[in-house]
Length: 312
Image (cartoon, rainbow, N blue to C red; front, side, top):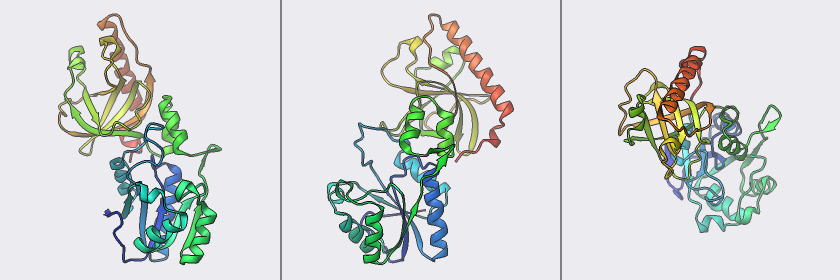
């Protein structure tokens, strides 16, 4: 996979799919499928045009995918070329025609543009799909509009998935993503509370503070360490029994393996939510609950072998 430098001209004729692609959900995958199919059919170079930062102010909504996570998914979907634009003032203040002329035509030499039906662009989102079609006639490129993807009658969107995951409805969110929601980062040393309880944990230092974490609670998870899949029980939260309220932590106990992953890169997939985080008066009560969580996780993987669960 090749990253095209921002503003660097491309000599080949291109087909471009434009979007934030937050989450790279089923709707985005439909867009990417069109891009790959049409570019092959028309002998064009396929390019995804996405952004290094979110057009919505970061305080408004956390991201389903960091830039690195998006790039990982794109690679898994066999996308060959990614153009990463920076949402700086000069780009955000361009008129729709200016954006098309400078970015799509002059820089990226596009002959085909693929967007979703709600696509908006240009200063203050002045341009829509009809604007794009008219500009396509002027600048000699084709436009394909991809309709919303519906799942059980509901339109798939990043905002809906965001709300589901934030609300703890991880399985529903995963069904709209088309893959399990994941967080990735480096395993760091914690306070050793899990080991003290008899259940050593891997503490994940996730990459980006603007990444959406699932609702606090306990989850069945799958860890991917260097291609090795690990059955996990993960707590997202503050360790209320131990009164650690400073930062949300992601602590995973992996079944039947030594948890010696310190300093290693780990990708953690959230499969099923088990329960809320609970504050216990006695440490032994917490230990008993963790044992019950582990037993429920074992039973889950007995019925759902880890190899049968489609990841990305």
